[in-house]
Image 1 (cartoon, protein in one colour):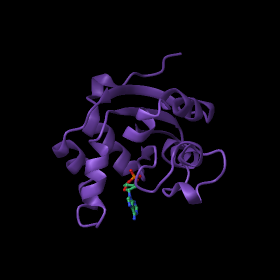
Image 2: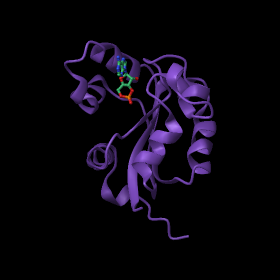
Image 3: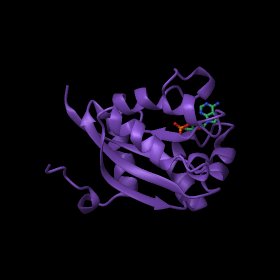
Length: 143
Ligand code: CMP
């Protein structure tokens, strides 16, 4: 296994429900470490660009509307197999199909408002981390 970095977003529904701390706790308990973090309210342009890969999907408009409905918390996470590990802790995209004990099962209600986003591959993790963070905003864990 290799040490990787991945991007996590606590989405507007989970921020609004005051679940930031609980979600970070799930991530940390799984062994992932936060190496960068910021809260921001995405503009329509930022959300549209971040999710550009879904531009042709029927849910794109609603997705951009939801992601700009309130502030989000974006984090770079580091750990062994971080991309897969993060997705395991997040659970399935649809909370109804997410396993017990996962973030989406415990904090999300619908496919549209599913509490968290996580990069789906190492290549996309690099692109997504660069989207939100400058290299000098990533803090190496020296202890
Ligand atoms: P996320 O992992 O952030 O990536 C794209 C998001 O689109 C996804 O989580 C869902 O919240 C949202 N979405 C809405 N409808 C669908 C759908 N039918 N299939 C996949 N994702 C969807």
